[in-house]
View 1 (cartoon, chains in turn red, green):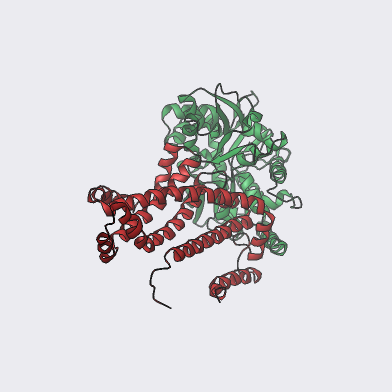
View 2 (cartoon, chains in turn yellow, purple; view 1 turned 120 degrees about the vertical axis):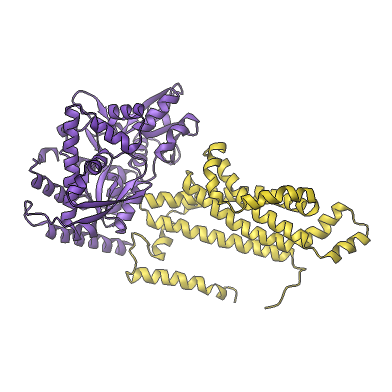
Length: 247
Length: 363
């Protein structure tokens, strides 16, 4: 039944293949799904290497951004002074398109991995800090009072009451952050890289290897979908205690 | 996939045949001179002096043409837009056009644009230079092994030529060389800041790097390509536009030929007004303008020793095929026919209408 739930995806893929076979689209611009999959098979070593590079950058950037975001979010929720300091900064920088900062990052950190990982970290930071803050601030007061009556100290309060209670919010932020991480890593690789799926897309486009380009795009979609489902699964496991409305 | 490629090639051949029928009228027959607008793809940040002069001196207007310039960031993007008929004509690179056309893109080259060569006196007129920092032990292309090289675009012929040369030297261009794409304008800075070890830069970028640090030149367009004459750019056209507006294409080429005739005369007479036109359009300061003139802008008329004005020589196309097949961007069974990727008839017709002489031995 869960597999059947993917029928919209299957429909889109079927339409893609059908359009190509009926000659409705120019294969110079959009090859058929079967040609794309064939290219994926032919170039699996290359694409696997590119995928590994992209995933490494995304994971590294996400880890840094998420760690910093979690800590700052928790501190903001706990201490007013820290909240007053970071809140206007977040308000100003969050709406800024992070990709616009990439040229600056390249100047400061060079054309190598550091600038790309920094960009991803920036992108991952904001949804996590905002959601962590919101989650911590929205913890049911009853849970806090209950813990206080049991002489919980500040550390216990945060780690055993507030943080677990805030997990649903935090995981929403994590899901958004993982999507942003993928998005930004591909975009950064398109601008400046010599490997990775974003690089493969732009390189294939410029050399008219259209099947390979779409193979890379498809691979990004598959990886993104997989990671998103994985994060959702982990989130549901970690917050299994939460009452949710049944469908 | 093969079926789709065959279909594309048949469509391409059909549209070319249609164009051939359209072009079969007598070369000297009067051109349709109705006002026409051309959406023209122009690569950002690169000087195309012939186009600049044609625009500045009103040769396009004289042919009753209005040009709508569309800026794109590389020759691959121009070829793609032409194939999609989102542009009518454009500046592209020979290799990009050969690649796009050979893979079924509905675009074709109709003339050369800017030439690179070494003239009779031994002076080189190069489109690009392979520039490295002095004193780092990089004396030739083989020394680039393990290094980072900047090119302007992955679809650039210089990406392909570097890979070809590296492969010929027995190295693996994928693992032994890191090629990064960046705009020409950023290259000098990247070299100075040691973000890359070599740049394939236009004269301007070379001058900027040279002003800031000691540099050496270890290669150039012609040394990479290995021919007596090269083309840094060609004029390409969408097949659909050529089929529907053959006279407009001829008129465009007439304007470009007139510009080149003026430029050749200006160089012969040492008329600095030509340099002023280019400097004004490219916003060069006097020092950069002078350097550009000395390395690139002063060649006009001298290329006629080797090639007809705006011609695309067959040997050049053959070299593109050789390079692209060698680095596996084109399959071995792709036909390497000149006429598949170049339609030189509009240019020949432009010659006839202007009373110019075509030398087949240079073609």
